Amino acid sequence: MANTHNSIHEQWSSRWTFILATIGASIGLGNLWRFPYVAGANGGGAFVIVYLFFVFAISVPLMMAELSLGRRGQQSPVNTIRKLREESAAGGLWQLIGWFSILAPLMALCFYAVVAGWSLDYIARATAGGFVAIEPKQAGLLFDQLLASPWRLGMWYSLYLILTVYVVSKGVKQGLEKASNIMMPALFCMIIMLVIYAHITGDPMRAWSFMFNPDFSKLTSKSVLIALGQALFSVSVGTGALLTYGAYMSKNVNIISSSWIIALADTCAALMAGLAIFPIVFASGLNPAEGPGLMFISLPVALGQMPGGYFFAIVFFVLVFFAAFSSSLAMLEPFVSWLMEHKGYARVPVTVCTGFVVWCIGISAVLSFNILSDFTPLSFIPLYESSNMFDILDFTVSNIMLPINALLIAVFTGWVFGRHILRDEMEMKSEAGYRLWSFLVRYLAPVAVSFVVISSFVDN
Image (cartoon, rainbow, N blue to C red; front, side, top):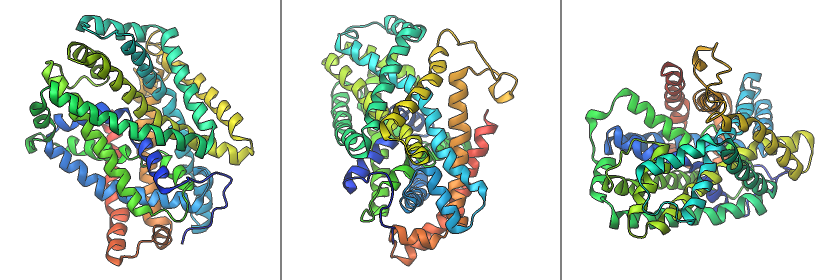
């Protein structure tokens, strides 16, 4: 059974606050544009089928294991892994899981907050009516002007980080919980509202065909790897969020059912985002493959030409902000929890100091879009030969740290740490269910994640 709570950290008030917070950690900017597009570009319904298989066969079992590790350790990822290593007499190599789980999300926040800050600028523009009847050339110019201005970009980046630091500094119950309890229901309400609006004013038939019409001829080995990588990191495996949020769980939370709810909610959010965006995209004759440009250039144009576009442009960019912000909280919390344990300092000064360090590093990512766009400090390394600071941070976290951490977690939970202990932690009573989970964690997950790690280097 789970240990009694003896951590310096607070616990979640209820199972549902934990679920909402973890859903918030999982849903991010990638759900709003990357998943719907890659699904459509890689076989539509065929890609979705492969993606769902990976979610349920690999991501959910690993999520269960990682949450169980977190709850058993009841500390920051670093100290949780240290405690579990001692419990299982595991070598020092496995401590990398703890360090990757606090450093990778912190580094990710340095560049993620830059992009997320764009949403604040666009909320202000939408509220001022800046997208009403806007022309494509003008929309492109506005976006270019934002990126070209270090002061404007830095202002929104700084404000976004200040908001993140403020919420995390309030703690689990007064900060993370309150934000999640407000943002997650609001986020799903906004997505549903936008889906209805898009189906009334847009071209829903083409959107459904693009996303769900099975075309197995478009499924390649690369498509399968994309689906696997999306399935892993969309539900926050290896990002530090599950280890950290799991440590705040009480023993009466059912890990198995909670994992399924989180995975299903994250998948539904990604699919609904596509059904909200692509009817408008196709009705306006836009290119669905534009990535961030789709959100910040093409969609403002499309919404600006449609009935009710003023209101729904505001709703859309508030949705973008909520999706990004809930993930950012989970990026900052792991490092803060470790510092509180390591130094014994109070949460507020620790959070403020950590936020300041993130801000200092992230300024280089802000300047990568303008003043330092041609600054490539690691050009002597082949993987980084043409990368500015934003690209370096992005590649290091997304292609190196997160895939390797996910692989380490898969092997540690499957082969090193006692699976019977995790079974007790999860309260998995079914023998057949345990054997299936054990097989997936021990064999399928490590092999699958290994392919993701290898492809991260081969493709670059």
